Amino acid sequence: MPNKWAIMAGCAGSMVCTLAVAAALMTATGTDAAPSSAPAASAAREPAGLADAKASDCFACHAIEHKVVGPAYVDVAKRYASRQPAIIDTLAEQVVKGTVGHWGSVPMPAHPNLGIAKARTIVKWILTLKPAAAGETAAATPAKTYSYKLADGKTVALDFPMFITGSNTKVTKDVFTGYEQYNSTCNRCHGDDAVGGAYAAPDLRIAMQGGLTWQQFLTTAMAGRVNKGMPSWAGFYTQQEIRDIYEYVKGRSLDLVPQGTPPSAQN
Image (cartoon, rainbow, N blue to C red; front, side, top):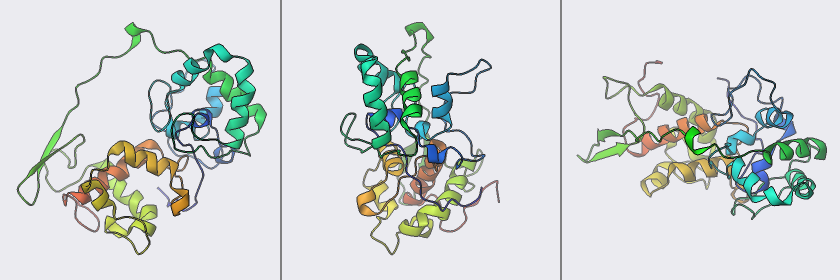
């Protein structure tokens, strides 16, 4: 995968982020894989609003049925069900201009290049959504854990595999991809191999040792901290790519993954 050096604005967890589409990103995503929360393409003709959302960065921060960084689309539809159609223009304007505070404290950036007409199309589609019927909801699968012994003799349980089956040194493809992604972008401020950088950006190993969770990591990566110089990576990295980076940094924080190129099936 080529290095991604451009900085792009993206979704954050607010009301309009639920509805956001960045027109500037429609051609920038190129052949990158669709975000993991985006619905699969259907043989039937899909609604125009859904098509526009999938072509943008909306699914970097949201999913239809569950919260990611911002709320689920079905929750947005439920909140505004009694205010249609009058609310459509209001929400479309907020998509274009940006806002904060309706779904949390993370600001939703403006999308001036989108235009009101396309914003209305996406808003109208979101407001048609309804939760899946009880019988259609898949039963939750018990979470699997993976245990690893650390250098100090303690054992840690993770919700993802750090190493491939049959090895305690070769990292998984996801962790190796996270290493590649981290050392092509994140390292500029956070230091090569997650050892801390020369800038004011924190040492992510220490942050994770202090309790930084996957949800917090994802939210920060997608929304950014513009006032501290950290860009938003929504629409640039997919949720899966951010997850890969998280798994790599988690491995570094536990000293399960060494500095430099980690051993893997890829090398």
